[in-house]
Length: 256
Image: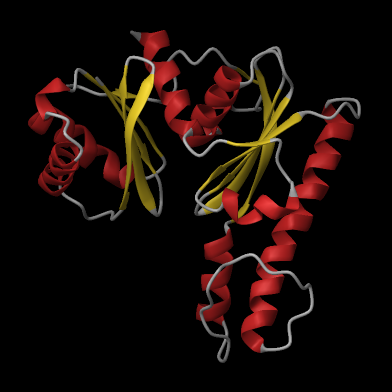
């Protein structure tokens, strides 16, 4: 079995593959101060709760955008599973040609998303929008070229910034809304968060399509924790919640 771990700023998102089947998925709040023992106990308990024996894990692959956590996660894998994980970073085979000015600047999570998108939708021009702590948008050609993208504050991060940096604005539930015009402070924040993201995705997809794909509509994939928030707006051709895990599995296969 293969254990895939996406170490993000807000959450650790993991999954277990048995050959081609994703058997289980799980999430844990990520904390920079987490020790290898805390992570190891958590992972082993999650496996047992899902009827997976920890000693059945044969490989581990990780993408991490929190450098302070990487040491603990690697030590956890070595101590609790007896495995040295494959860490997605420069030099690891991905099958992508990265056209950033400095390819090392591209986050491991964005690379894993791109690889997963190519696995699920081969031979197509693609745009991937990942709604995590930050919302990232990536464009990938059907020739497996990562040509660039966008990074902006995520939905929850924007809401927390309003709460923390203003004197009178409250924290609100993040949810779909019907009306663009709010009639209370809470409704106004909710509609602002929701419709600003809808407009942002539409505008960026349109501009990338015109600039990079000669106006030919690419396939647009949504992923990440808040992707399903926008189901009613038909922003995406597909929503693939486990996209990053699929990408990590493919990267592990390429480097086996």
